[in-house]
Structure formats: C-alpha cells, structure tokens
Image 1 (cartoon, rainbow, N blue to C red):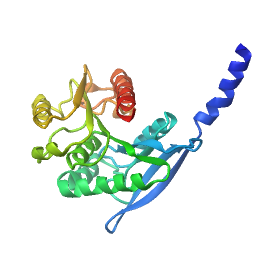
Image 2: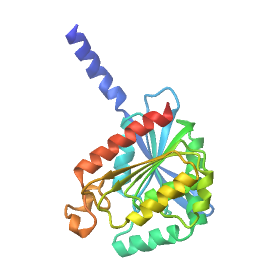
Image 3: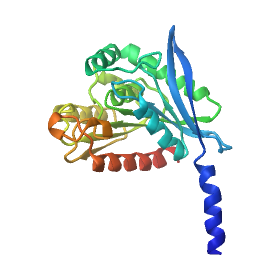
Image 4: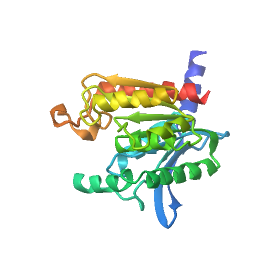
Length: 256
C-alpha cells in the first residue's frame, strides 16, 4: 500500500507543477504593455488569479519569479508592466523617474492598472470573480490605488509598499480586503504613514490587517536588496517567509 501511494505521488507531482509562462501584450491607449503570465496548464477549471505589480525597477526577473511561484500554488499569475514596452530601469535614478511619472499622476496610475485587470478578467484561464492584486514597494502603492479606484477585486496584499495617497476620500469605494506586510524598521514607510493609513481604512470601514516584521527594512522580500539593513534597503529571510505565508492564508480566506 505504501509503495502504491509513493508511486501515485511521483505521478501527480509533475501534473501539479506543469506551469506555462508567456509574454503577453495589452494596451493602455497607444501604449503597448508587455506582461508576464504564468498558469497551470493541467487545470480543467478557471483559476483564481493574482496580479503582481513590480518594484520601481520595472518588470524584471523578480516579479516573474513570484508569478511562477503563485502558478505552482494553483493560481493564474499576471505580472504587469506599468511603464510600457516591458521597460526595466538600469539605475536607481532611472527607476525613480519611471516610478515618479506614474505615481505622480494618480489618474494615469489607476487607468494603467485597471487596464491590466480588465485584460486578465477576459483571459480564458481565469475566474473573473476571483482576482487579487499584490505589489512590492512601488507596486504596493499601485495595488492600493487599484482598490481605492473601486475595482471589483477580492483582495490586495502589499509588501513594503507605500501607504499614502493624495485621495484618501476615495477609500470609501474599496471593495477588497487588504493585507499590509511592512517592515518594523522601514524608514520609507514611517509611523506617521502607518497611522494615517489605519485611520483612512477605519474611517471607510475597510476590512484590513497589517503585519509588521521586526528588524525588517525596505524591500525585505527581495534577495537582491542586499544584506545591510543600515543602508535602509535589505533582504530579511524571516520577514520574506512569514509575509509569503501570510499571503497564502489570506488567499485561502478571500477565494473560498
């Protein structure tokens, strides 16, 4: 009997992990965007889906890696392109300019991420009624603004993302549940922003939660952030693993 079960596990593992990835093009007006889609080709049902919004660097290998992770867990995962043509910054200065051009224009930001959401809802592999959005750093800000735009999504997860908005009154339109994962020592997300965010969410009666990870600074989920917290940006393995597990449990809640 044990030998039979072992053989069945060997047979099933490749089936469960058969992930297809592809670069897909979609449009925001005359701007061509190049996203990265990952999903399990063995599923016979439409999948719950997760939009992934990149850090200020653009759609590089990191969000693509996260998309593959989520696809292996059974989700359709769509890493979006917020800059156009799949552009990736080659320096912090360039990244700041690219992110600023989006973050400094909230109507443009919301339109661009809503275009991605609309595209995903039309995808034949996706259950349009079960979509969440996650974002890292700059992407966390984008994910929250998607929720504030009133988008019909189940949930938002931010990892070391900016929490502020110039339009806090729009939070009354939030339909999603929200999970914020932030570093306890993140100087880019100061306590004043945290308190303002909590008030904003409470005033609008949003279903939200916040996990604060001790010793973690900005960009704590990305191994390429280095290992020197004194720089203000560094990887933290414990915070990375704990926040990923928190996200997984959050998805079980919102999709069931």
